[in-house]
Length: 482
Image (cartoon, rainbow, N blue to C red; front, side):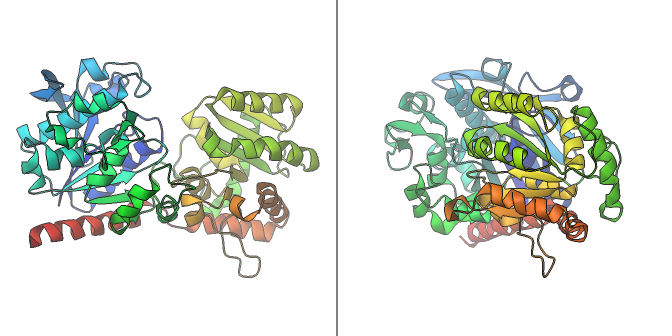
């Protein structure tokens, strides 16, 4: 099967969040299974020279956009049987950052047009065109409504994956009407407009042949007003074409048995080596090196979604009443950063904070921690709980989205389960879930069982990629039947 993907970011080239991890891993798994995969990405200035030096300019294409013909270079990079095509526009992507520009709507509208122009001009064949999040969600509409690209729709079906419904790409209607050469009737209020604006994600939801979310539970949640971010009615209309597929984990990159970023490699049969990594983590962060004190860690973007408000209430109480340590690695809203910095001042022997992000440090903390905290109010999938379990670190999480699908409450009798859950909707506080974890930490037999249950589970991309393959096959079967 020939699969083309279009996205705004992808590891190792450009990353701001989990979207990049998915685009870095899913195409590789599909290629392993024999599929012909092409990934379209913007050629940002922020891409490291170690990759750019291996890019090859293979074509210059004219992209008609906003009433002008704009130049676009197409650069190719091959890796693990995947063809990456980077689209260069100095006007739109010659910036110092990926997002957060005043003209983001125009930039990613251009990218979407450029992707389809490149596919047509270079005769890139596709059975499936898989787009991700709001940045490329306009592509299904263009295939159906723009006469230049309808030929692509004759042989390909479209899939849109929603990685986080909170980010929708809302822009003034002129960003749409001035950018595309479409019939004036193309701005269909029912499928494009939202609260007087042009909503890119809503457009994709309306026009894609299938819409997926990154976990089954998140799929169900976004059909409700509590999680639907205002688009729940639009999603309900597509309910029959809405599918939840859990993200996988790159088990090569996150592998404690081969991870050179940690102090001592280990696997589930040598899990006692975690103690070496715990001492290293404590030492690196300036905490007392104590093997018998539970080390709790949070690695996160500091935003309301992540439940930092829950920790503002819970952590001071837990630190005062329990012998434990806490390490934070992350950055985000200033008020949340200030909270953790102040907490470290109040509990200097118990709390350490690193504002920012450091990949190697993150790996060492996953390997060294006993308990990983994820009090998210909502979590489309979540990656940190999967990484923590891979490293034998026990997650304590709120029962929502992908956390609900992957973290299973430990059962003392059957010795099944891999973590502990709160439920904000069911009046089950996060502090109580943490206390259950601390209680079992004191019972070594049970604690070892919990850690091994997490380490031995399969959260690789193999199963998830198989579900995407099934979805693709269903769509192409329907296409060939016509």
